Image 1 (cartoon, helix red, strand yellow):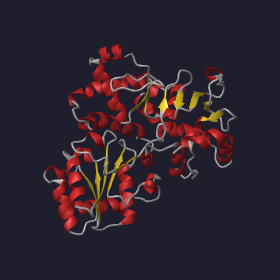
Image 2: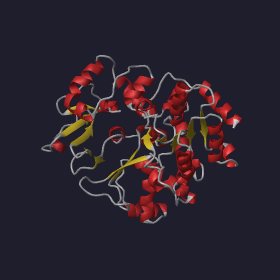
Image 3: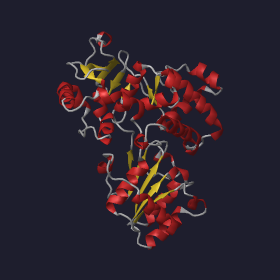
Image 4: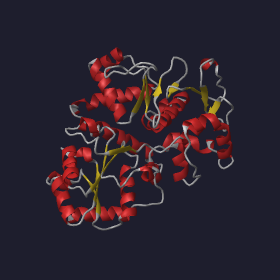
Amino acid sequence: MNKLIEKSNRLLQNTSLEFQRELIQEIQWDWRLISLIGTRGVGKTTLLLQHLKQQFGVGQQAIYVSLDDIFFTTNRLVDFADDFYKKGGKILYLDEVHKYNGWAREIKNLYDFYPDLKLVFTGSSIIELLKQDVDLSRRALMYELNGLSFREYLKVNKIVDLPKITLSELVETHVRLASEITNTIKPLKYFQDYLKQGYYPFFLEGPTFYSDRLEQAVRLVIESDLDFIPGYDPRNARKIYQLFYILSANVPFKPNISKLSDKIGVHRNTLIQYLHHLEKARLINTLYPAGNSISTLQKPEKIFLQNTNIAYAISPTQIDKGNLRETFLLSQLKVAHEVMLPKKGDFFVDDTYTFEVGGSNKNSKQIKDIPNALLAIDDIEIGTTTKIPLWLFGFLY
């Protein structure tokens, strides 16, 4: 245990509090059991360490441990927690829980039998609390940490610090909002850099190896994280790689499931399951037709990469500006909104708004006569009544 305390304290000493994700203020930290999920590289570990450092500092009341530490290959979490509790420990910050066999049951036991011990745990976005061998969903408050929005990217780079805006505010007052922001900064000056290397906070360590690190993160998600899905066969990792690279070279992709399953060499239902895995791992986004209920084995109507940075890292020679625009808008909208594929237009949001995406010469011909139809337009600073600057959607979270 002393070794783990030393590791935790060493990490705390090297943790900067200068930039913090706003989620750290939104989490109800006084709750007894908190779950934080997210894909690799978005900053879950940093957020835990920052909160621990702020609230407790270096000491023995609170400790950060990663459950993929070699210590837990021969020691049980419940035994470690019991020892920690008896020595005055009050809160455990548990990282990478999905890499510890039986994590859900042991966390439930700690919750049930140590009523004054608080637990905060992180895991991959593939974790589904309802599908573990015990149901933690009734006990845990669950939060998801997404990659940086364009607004947060500007903040972390000390360019400007502005509040987030709601979708209704954006739709109703975007001209005023864009005017106010462009009086402070020139957003288009930074927007392309964000699309290329701004979604994952590790760009702060330097842009030189950003794409290499992102590609490595994608490999680890497919080779390692997916392995923790119940019933997943790790021998299929190569086929999922193949599927992901086909998608990355062709997005936005309207899948012909029969042809795609033949090409990869898997059954149609297995292929749809792979697509579900890739979306849970936050590597792709899928769209289904508006107005239809979605079944488990239904194929998506359209597939995108989860964010534009992945496109630059995985398929840098296949970059298409129109695809980048749509990918960006979808990645910002899906954080807090339901997005479907309309019959006309690109995205149907919250059963209310239809958005068509395009460049500065785009007109509204394709969405004419559709209620609440709007254009999301790239390469403009300020819009007009129905034309909203694309970059401004990066202020939604």
